[in-house]
Amino acid sequence: MSTTPSADRTATGVLRPGGPGQLAGRLVSRVGYGAMQLRRLDGDRRAAVALVRRAVELGVDHVDTAQFYGNGFVNEILREALRPEDDVVIVSKVGADPDPDGPAPLRHAQRPEQLRASVEVNLKTLGREQIPVVNLRRLDTGPGDRAEGDQVVDLDDQLAVMTAMRDEGLIGSIGLSSVTVDVLRRALPAGIACVQNAYSLVARDDEELLDLCLAEGIAWVPFFPLGSEFPGLPKVAEEAAVRAVAQSLGRTPAQVGLAWLLRHAPNVLLIPGTGDADHLEANVAAGAVTFDDAHLAALDAVPSRSLSLD
Image 1: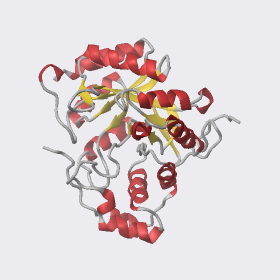
Image 2: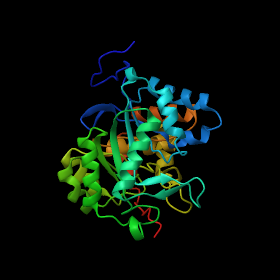
Image 3: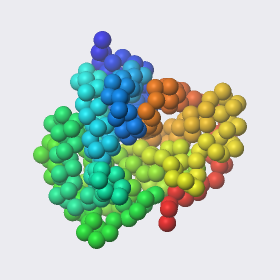
């Protein structure tokens, strides 16, 4: 039975994993779910829907998605799995479009008309009249390539269409992804709800950006929270200090890495992704991990390395 959401519990009455946090003026659990890995279940829609339902049962009430995750498949699963009474905040992103027949599964889509078209197709596949938060995925920083040619678009032109869509009610709030601190400063007058950048215990290049978000009341939602998926780049679970703390606490290195992020700054919201129910439960349980001073000192001393592929 649904209950009135409170600081400690979701709309479905479940204790919030990781405690409460703020996202676009909404109270949410600090541990959410990144839905990208659902695309791996495209041969078993029932399992994909069940995984999303399990996340809600565990107290997840904000989900990160995009139309280019599985060429719309992930959005369709969320549409089928999520119910109005779950009161889940859906966060999507624009700046790239699916390209299933191309050399890569997505292509850049940075121009204003492309951003609008991306929002419209997200609305269609999600089955919604408004997306609560939409992140503008730029290509200013972090792993991956950079914009070229007509995909090099001025931030002001992009924010103009994003704010217009917000005024029209198509989106509720604007977020940013893969941006520098200077870009965020330029964007602040538009009203920014969250920032998604690559950030983890082993890759803390964006500490200044995180501090700015904290000062401005902006949620910090790191992707690659356990280090990069790209070969040769740092991974949290490979750090000796992380493994030692995990063994001491009877937790996994991944849980330690996620819990460190929650402890590091109060505006951090997590969106770890998985296509496996056991892994989902382990990620959510990271919200309950605590450290003593010695553990925290050992983790804070882990060196930071760049996630850039440049």
